[in-house]
Amino acid sequence: MQNWTSRFFLFIVFSAFVEFSFAQSYTSYFTGDTSDVNTTTQGVTVLMGGATENDNAMIWFLQHSGGGDIVVIRASGSNGYNSYLYSGLGVSVNSVETILFKNGIASHDPYVVRQIRNAEALWIAGGDQWDYVSYWKKTPIDTAINYLINVKHVPVGGTSAGMAVLGTIVNTAQNGSVTSEAALANPYDAKVKLLNGGFIDDPILHNVITDTHYDNPDRRGRHIAFLARIFQDDGLAAYGIACEEYTAICIDVNGIASIYGNFPADDDFAYFLQVNCSLPNNPENCSSGQPLTWDRNHEAVSVYKVAGTQNGVNTFDLNDWMYGTGGTWENWSVTNGALNINSTGTAPDCISSTDDMDLNATEDIITVYPNPAQDMLAISIPGSTSVRSIIISNRIGQKMVTINNPLHMIRKDISLWENGLYFINVRGLNRQKTIKFIKN
Image (cartoon, rainbow, N blue to C red; front, side, top):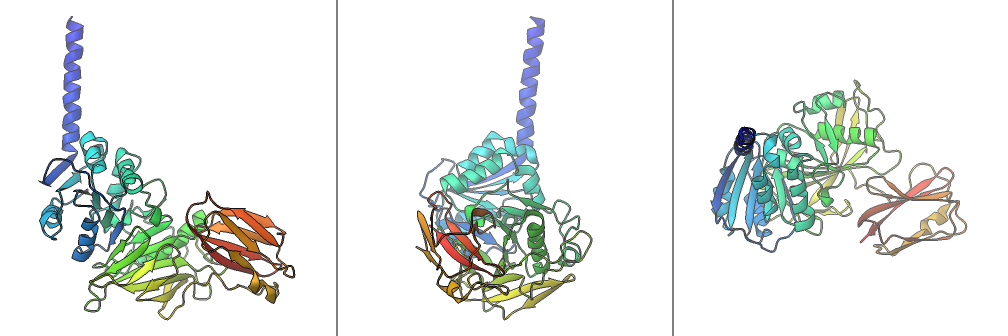
């Protein structure tokens, strides 16, 4: 009897300790109606540069929540978003709750997990992205966030560190924030810590690494260093999205990014970076302890720079990463650790041929149809061409199909492929060309 009593007492003490630990691991600030509601939402994404929130972008964010329950998660600060989101923007919502994580224990708290999963919109505040990675990765929290994005389809967004963790490739800042100067001087600097996959999974941000505070300090150099490291280490031609401090990017359900800011009164810009597709396009020198060189005829990275306006009229298409309105193309390159920017650059050319090739002029009538394609893709090759192989890759460089010595007509079932942009690389003896198509 005494042994049973002792065990029961220890169980009560342990249960109380666990409950106390969970309670001490977070703080909840709640505003509005405590009853849970279910509204019609749209799975949009908002990326914000890290200073004062852009009101028009936040209104857009709330409007896609259907007036439901808004949850803000953060690891520093307090309840500053509650009144702002609940009553400061003129959009009626049921509630706003800020959950302040004090440590990783909160990531396993049933209440915290439930509140996030029940949200009709999720906002990730600024702070230190390493807190977010170390607290949330491989816990019920990142599972809940991915549920909101990919199953429930609610608006999800973030500013500063909150934006930094939304791409599927993350600069974790595990060892602190790296400067552009340091990253260009040594892309393997101890502060360049990159996480590729296994965390937040927003399909429109697949193989994207974001950066914020682009104007203060200048982070363009470190961003291109991140892309070089990803290319060197993983063989991926990744993408970059960046915001200046007072700029916001609102991505709708169709993958069209609208840019909000206060241009022309202020220089508020967003940037969309991609590796130039003219081969070869890998860094010439991305080595530990050495300055980065990624030049490729001064066209290593193509960048669409677009101003943010109060009505978000300027856009960029994240389906093909080729077309935008209101912006200009720049070419960025790095020589011996020095960043070079050509502000009169050109759009990436993935259609015309590269290098000195020996495919004859009839290659120009190689046709790909339909484009866009849904189920079946056809490639027609004139009999007089000297095509040796055809390689179809997705936009991150993964090979889907390799066909050696192809026949004059190729038909490929692509019904099970993911929607998005693909590249058909046609190779001759000493020539090659790349043709784009879209699967939808």
